[in-house]
Structure formats: C-alpha cells, structure tokens
Image (cartoon, rainbow, N blue to C red; front, side, top):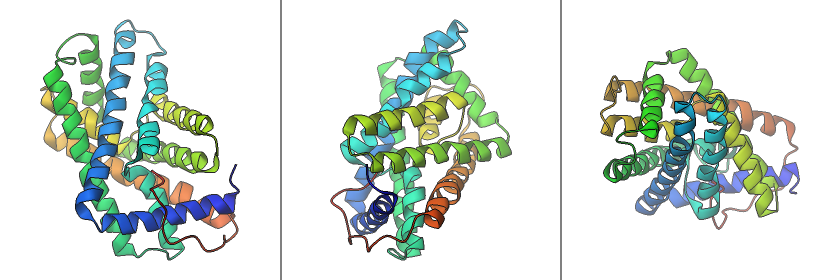
Length: 268
C-alpha cells in the first residue's frame, strides 16, 4: 500500500496529466466521452438489476443496484477515461500545490463535463434503440428514479451531491493507495454501493438517468428539470470532492517530495 505522501503525489501527478492531456482537446473529449459512457453502462446495469426487485417491493433493491453500479468506476479507472467527479478532488490538489494553473484546471473540468454528458446521451440513445426500457419493471424503475430526480428540492440535491462525491473521491484516493488490482476493485465497488444505496446524487450518473427519462418521454421529466438537477448536483459534487476530501488530505498529509511532471495515464 502506498504511503499517504506518495498517494498525494499521485494526485498531484494526476492533476498535471489532466492539464497536459486537455491541451489536445479532441483526444481529451473522447476520453471524457468514454467516462460518461462507462458510468452510463453502470447506470443501465443498476436499473436492469434492481428494477424487477423494486417492482416486487423488495426493500433491498437499492442495495442490489448499488452493488452492480461499481462497474462504472472500475471501467473508468481500469479501462482509462476522464471522469469529472474524481477530477473535483484531483484538480484542487493540483491548484493547492501550484502544479497547475486555475485556468488549466477549469479547462480540463469543462471538457470533462461536456464529454461526460455526450457519452451519457449516447448510451441513452443506444438504450432507447434497444427497446429494453420501453416497458416492464425496468422501464418503470427508470421512470420512477428519473422523476424523483427532477422533483427533489434544490437543497436536498446539493447535499446529496456533496455526500456522493465524498464517496467517489474516497474510492479514487483509496484505490490509488492499493497496489493490488482486486483490492482496487473491491474498494471502488463498495464506495459506489454506499452512495447508490444511500440515494446520493452523482452528476454523471444523473446525466444518463435523466437522458433516459427524456428520450423515453417519461412524464414530468423535462429538459429544464434535468438541467436544474445537473447544475445543483454538479456544485454539490464539487464541494464534496474539493472541500471534504482534497482539503482534509492537503491539511493532514505531510508535504511530499516533488511529484513528477506528468504520469502515463490519468488517475480516473
């Protein structure tokens, strides 16, 4: 297992990588599209696994959905792609250590938001074409979840967004410490299960959920409602990653030795 200073170094290197990689806009957008698609695949997996259970009023349906949703972050990290929510921890660490500039970090985050959204929409359109959510318990569960997301009060969305990204960023931080691939997968899967089962809000997962609701014509799921959800959850996720994960580790971990200028690949 990596020491805490070495783990912080890895996050600094990840921030530098995001700065350098995002200068090639086209390639970086594709990497971000992949991340949106990977989370979208996990979102669909969650609905198909938990939907039939929810239809039978089985109380542990959310737990089942949470256990399978971990596939998304595992794909993001192991296959390689650029996910905006983990960047909300990595980029602020880079800013604090002055390894990247504020404009560079904002550029990378902006490209990730765009790419993640495009990847989510692509998955939603593919699922619409497949017909697997046109009717039945899976469709009903997707409709129920997407409707709930557009009607939740703004305050609830914001605080659920904070809690969600605390878990996502802890998953990324902890898997960085682990040196065994199985351990990495387990910690990521458990953290994802915790946020899904608890009902927290992840902006990229919501991009797919709300896109599914829109393309399937779910009642009361509107573009305006979806936009409100995504903006508020994005802000909550940003606070969760920067204030509740990056800041405590910056304050508690001893200043590491100088991090390398770049890494071969992004942390997540």
